[in-house]
Length: 110
Image (cartoon, rainbow, N blue to C red):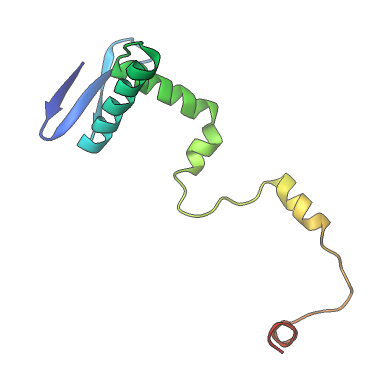
């Protein structure tokens, strides 16, 4: 079930605690994409699904890949995990020679 409120569609999704529908506001572009997904599911599977079912499945999918979903909201790159840092540091050696910026510039640029 959905209704329009001043240029926005409101879809009703059951509340997890009460089972009663809860309004979900979305812009027209998002609503259109939801409708496209709904239509493509019917076209490719022959099964008619509600927008509520599509939204529920999308949330389930996001929960299954929770970290990737959360990371998609970051503005910057994700830092390395402890295992990735350890793997990176395995390739480093201490030569006992201190190197400063001037040395690096000389090596890189001559």
